[in-house]
Image (cartoon, rainbow, N blue to C red; front, side):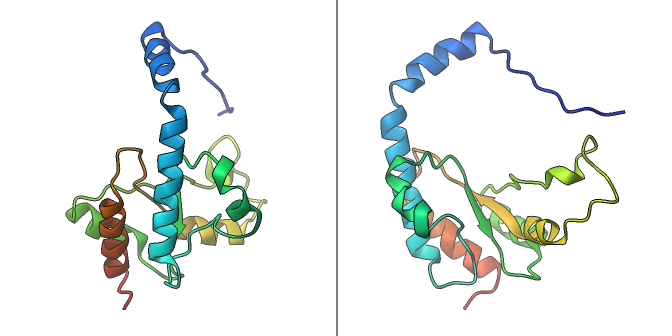
Length: 151
């Protein structure tokens, strides 16, 4: 039987690296927020949804740690094909949020979550890192839109 577990151990080398990186955290976070805003501008009005761009999220952007950039592809979109097109263009993507109810430790056939499953099939995580350039955002966004056939 599978059970959820945790491993919070950190070795000395990672701790030393983290101490140095923490000094750069405010700069990194500001850059990530700027890149998030650039993605939001590029994807606004398209068929790609960028969660967390409105309401309290927009008001709180200045204090948010934007650590990843998940988007929702249009319904019926072939995510695997989109990922392959982006990969062919040298753009790495991932699926960051698989539904937890599909994990062995939580799986229960009696629990049906059709909305979660539908959204999970559309989620795609785009590149976002402090050294990324604004021009890279333009490239990723336009390649993504081209891959899904958005005119």
